Length: 83
Image (cartoon, rainbow, N blue to C red):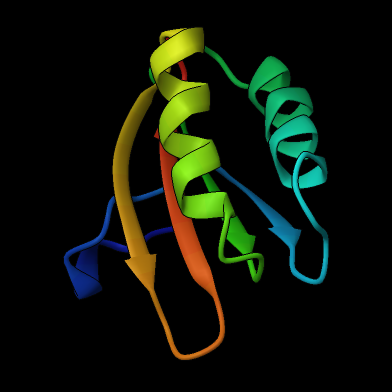
């Protein structure tokens, strides 16, 4: 999968956490990151407005890199690189 044509990072795995309130998107992301090899990218789609801050804090605490956060009309896409 790829996001390179849009200028966004390419990703190996996607988690759609739409409709879920935090901390559920973080927990889903954590589980998905465990399936990835170091350096691989996860895209998480959320609809909870608090998720933007939560993912920033999660990446800071976990050591995973937050590559981008893109707000669409009704969702936010988070791109995380596994440490």
